[in-house]
Image (cartoon, rainbow, N blue to C red; front, side, top):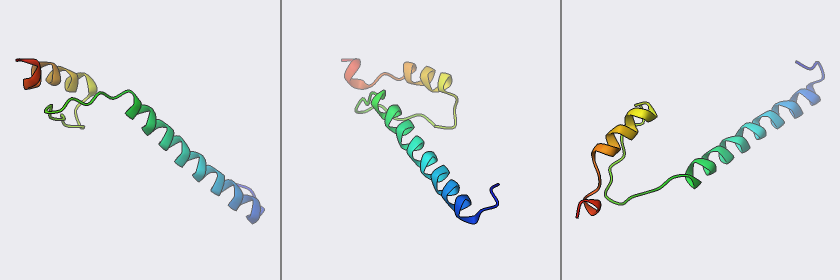
Length: 66
């Protein structure tokens, strides 16, 4: 840590801003790669992505089975 309280506050503020900005960029990136299909229920977020994908493949929405 820096001994100068002014510099310390500046560094803490900058670190918080970077973390917040990175979180927003990451969330926007996730949303931009998402496909939403009406009628398809979301799987539990606690499951690993590979298991969620397997569950989704087994339950196609009704609109695709017509």
